[in-house]
Structures are given as structure tokens and as C-alpha cells.
Length: 136
Image (cartoon, rainbow, N blue to C red; front, side):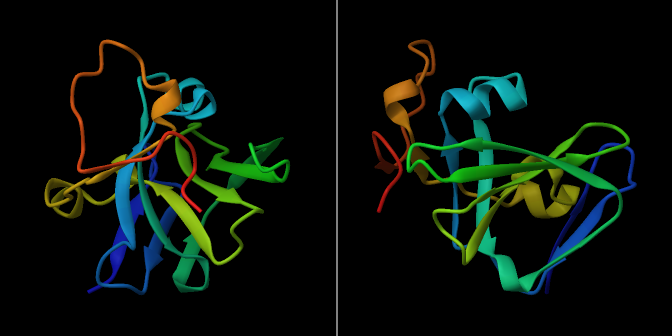
């Protein structure tokens, strides 16, 4: 069974030829907070070569902590964030798990937090695998 999802307006769809993500977690970095407009971004890391992305997207690139660009991909119609694609880790891409099809996201079990150094003090949930920065 593939991982599938779409943006708010449905113009962008995707499928990932994987049974489950490599990792599901919270990204507390300042950039994810700003892009999501929330306290963190729920991400599902998958192999980029397994992703098929369809529809009108735009991207915005900004240097990450590695000094290499992180490309933030979003729907050019409704603005929904779809993924972030770090040049520092070419084999993977982090899908915004809130865009997963409804039944798939109901079964997610996040267990990892990254960039906890940026975690807002009122976020009380603590997942099993926290990392102050990006794990290596």
C-alpha cells in the first residue's frame, strides 16, 4: 500500500511507493514554525526516489543549519506546504504529514522530535526520541 496525500485544494497530489515512512516526528525549528504557522511541523520522512508528486508546485529555498539549502515545496494554488527537501540529505524528503490522506494520518505514531532547542516552552508533549538539532 502506498502513502498518498494532497494539498487543501486538491491540485497537488502525491504517492510514495513505501508501506510506511522512515520516520514520523515533530520538527520544532523556527523555519517549520513559520511555514506551518504553528508550534512545529509534523513530518514524515520518505525516500525521495519513491515519491511521485503531481500538480502545480512552487518552492522556496533557504540555507539550513548545514549551510546547504532546504527547499520548501508548496501548492502554487492554495499555498499548502507539501514537503521540505534538504540538499544536505539528498536521499530523503520530509512530507508534511498533515497532507496525508485522512485514514493514513489517523494511524501515524510520531516518536521523534528534532530541533528541540527551538521547542516552544508551552509544548508539553515529549516524544521517545528527542534531538536538540538535526540528527546525523
